[in-house]
Figure (cartoon, rainbow, N blue to C red):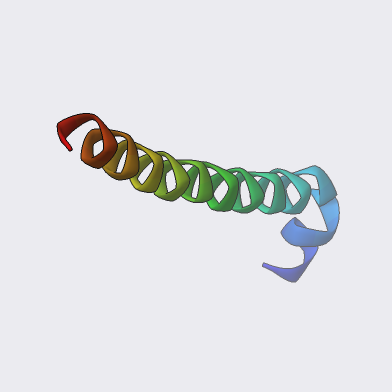
Length: 45
């Protein structure tokens, strides 16, 4: 297993990029839901 991981540094890099992307997408979704709730609240009132 160790030799496989050493032989594939791009796999670790890809995993890190996927984690970062997941965090960014999650933040965008949370911000969007907050924005949508505020927008709908302002629109309804």
